[in-house]
Image (tube, rainbow, N blue to C red; front, side, top):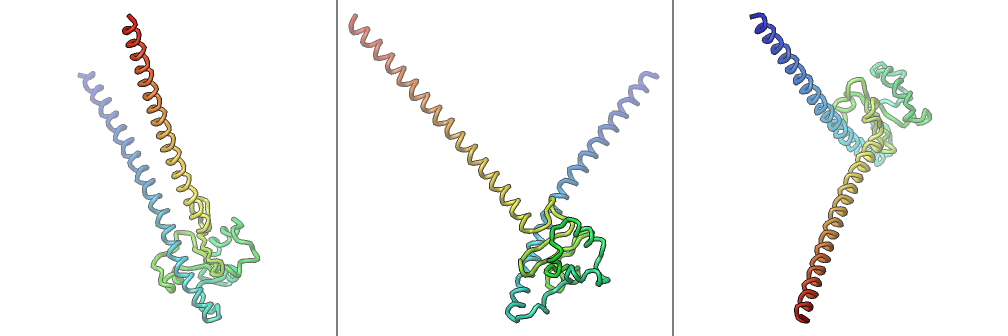
Length: 206
């Protein structure tokens, strides 16, 4: 009786451990998919913001004034109560922007994003920053180790190019193998034909 209880208890514990392992694996997979989705959303948001800011800047050029540009210059952030100084100071430590260029870069708050008719919000503990003159958008918390949208898109373009190159090389290699195989078959057929001719000549001589 005791042996049966011990066996049952062992099976129960093993089942519980297996269930916990499956749950843990499922959670990690879901987290991975969520991270991929979040990164994709960030890039989409940045492209959308960049487009809206470009239109705004072109309008200001036509009007010959920068008064219509939306956002707070990094150089003025210390005097703006609505800007989270901790986020900006931490971003400055990355040296992504030269200190002499702070006045060219505008911090976009959620209110600013609404004002330029972009229905997205800043990521948690982060700001989007735009340089209208250079058409350069930045995310202060970074994206895969990159901060500038131009760097992010360049990296993904290069990655896609490498994938395409690898696929082409693989296809070329397969084609080369097929050609070699066909050549070997042709050679084999020629050898067989030669052997048959030699046998026919031998029989004729006999």
